Image (cartoon, rainbow over all chains, first blue to last red; front, side, top):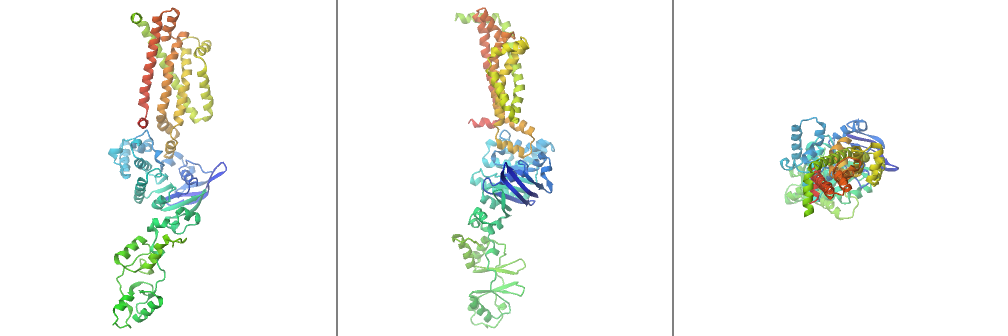
Length: 378
Length: 218
């Protein structure tokens, strides 16, 4: 866990970082993002003391880093910068092994084994690339080596300063994917600086949006997208950002919260009146605790015109129906609608308690919003 | 043709003397250049870390280079006497500038990102100097040493003036006695030695150049 406590950095009278306090949880990937000159890189470099704060303290797992031995501190923090961070006169192997060799804690064979493991981890064939020089590698490969080097001392914390921004778009996306995968396995605490919102949305657990040396919003990706703190945030996110990441649109955001329900012992006749009155073509059948029991459609009743209209709906309702959970995203929901060609699907929580209803028309309303000039997406 | 055969006869008759002069010359040059490296490289490193020293040190080296070499020898004799001591002193003083300047230039032109990365991953200042900055600036430093070494070969010929020996001895005694063969016996090997030193310098430069720089020429 990294804790920033009232960190301020001034150059002469110019405030670069002003009174920033926040916490980065262990095992999370936090992206510091903002326009160039907003102080995000300064904040990052304060963590490994490449920049000394003018005032305030930073704690890693409760220890004040300003009081630790700076060399020891840095060796326990991985550091990846843009591709030029590799030593051009050293081979891939020498680049990765530089700190372990300087530390002399392990013997050479152990270090080599670790290096091979790291190379495999970042997707470089050791036998092919171990003895190559950085200039013999492509930009993407160089950055893979950079990432491998950062992991060489098994640090808990890794700092990444725009590591992928110099790469071509295809390689960049590839490395982002791999980083996300790596992180899901290794659960390191990663602080990642970028100015690219697409990148941030893709990889971050939390985004820390910085403007003019202050934190504007620090929250999960989902929260920032749905509840931007102010206009700056929504502008920075881009007005229709959420549509490029539809997996953040959840059932709970778009469902009708109070669908029309009836109790199982209501008569068919009463429920038909209910439908006519509420102008709906189906009713959800729930018990007193709102547990979903089934669904009854106007069509079903019409099809059985001859039946006794005084029997309870529980006898004719359809009980094996598709359900979705509040956390399902819009892509999954659309899938369910298409697969079963349904017109309405109830949303229930894990205890089968009814939360809401999604209908084709509510889906249409949601989806059409990206083309309409409405400030509130949901 | 006649002149050439005459010269060859003269040279073979005086080959013992020439051997002594060659050894003297090589010895003086080598010794001076080693002293110049031992002083110049640390000085060059020093002025990249203490920026305040940069101007005075480079200024001094510049001024020394501007002093005519014969005049400098003249200044030295009253203090250091005659012989090898003032000769080495002079050659060292003249060799310093290219070595100091190139060392400083080489060190300060190492990519700032590379240095920041080495700091960031936890290398000490000394480790950064020894493992990153020096290896990366070796080609530039070596170019300076090569220039100094070649000039030294020429400068050492002046040392004969104050009795230090070398090829200069043959040249000056040849001039005094108006013996063209003797002048050439000093001048020709001095030229050849300078070329050999330059060639060796090039070889060393090539060896110390990290692979990454060789690539850029492609």
